[in-house]
Length: 561
Image (cartoon, rainbow, N blue to C red; front, top):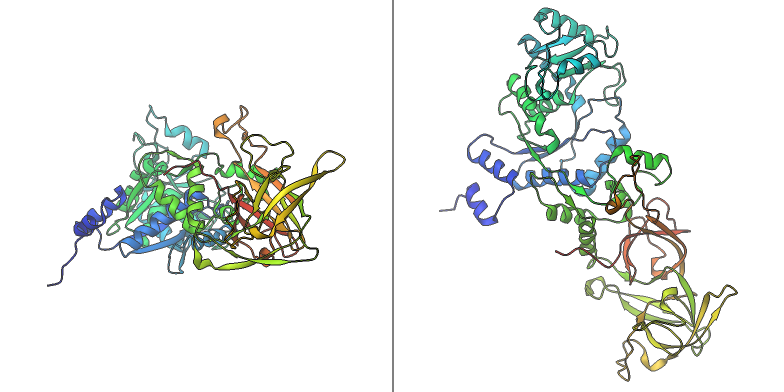
């Protein structure tokens, strides 16, 4: 007889579950729900950041785990801030992360008619009323955390009067702010959200999806549970700041008598050190020209991370390492860097690029001779194959790979010292040339033909290996190096409330050289530049005529797992 697996048996096989999974499995076992539906419900008023990735991947992952459905739904109930531009950007981010919403994009505005009918139902039940108090008066009547609120003088209007006034609001009779529809709950509730919250307001504004059809719009705390219920969402998973809103969420779905009403569950947000996620701060950075847009690689919006070279796999790994909990905490940015290194180290070619070049001339190498070395693309992954790298008399090397008077334990080039040119020959430093300012511009060496890489030469050993690019074949490039945009150790904010910005968050190197295998790269292609880190072709500024590479992450990690 075939074994019938229960949720408990699956749990025993899979091991421990996070607290949300435990709630879902209990609900399934007890028959509270016969399916699982989750959703990611962004308001299209800005760009998504790394914190949103946690919510997207959590909700999508739960739907997949329990063979359920995942909805992408835009909570577009506030036309004052929303744009189609943000809708498109959010959709691209969700697609990039690999969340599966079956290609069907949902909008809260698709349900405006049903929300209006839901409000009518509350009025008829005596659970909602039209109020003429101004926004300031409503705040004054609401009371404080220690004092109960006062009832609005309009709270006891008749059902008939409320129905008429609400219809007149819908028909455009009243000006913005002159009337609102409020839920009738409890002005003495210890929870401020339950003190007759506003659920509809007048706003004569064109909506990105419904145009000018409506001049009243539902408030988020009313619209959100209605949307979830209409879509048969089972578990409405949100962040901890909505915990105090849960009683209102439950009141709405209860009073509207939805069958199998959705259950709200809160989890801790993802806080990342040394980054900026606040829209107000990012907007100022953009407006002041400190960053070149919401996709500037120093930011952690998802399109900024994508432009910098982070992969969906690295974001998934990061979210999994962070875990799911009910306690707020901060995560070191070094963990995110660890994840992208782990993802790229076996997937990407390791190529040579010289970021701060000086010339190396091999005096005894034949003039006009060019050799091609077969070089493995990734020494840890043979499946990536090999490429041919040209070698000639004049090379570029890193400025830091030569010192006239080196300190102890410096094993690179200095007068009389011998090093290995990576994948090529041993060379010995014979002399060097300086310009009028005293800067070294050329290093002159001799090479030993017997030491050719792959020849099996064992005559002697050298302690230093440096990389290089053939000057004749080198491809010019611009390279951008990034550091954290703020330093929380010194305080994220200055005394005046402005951001404490790191003046070294961006370094642009204009005169770099990369090996010719990178000439035909395209946007988002990424590589390891040996000894320098992982780099990505910039999707905004790079072109065939002017290559631009962003450093994704250095090779060294301070994060331990």
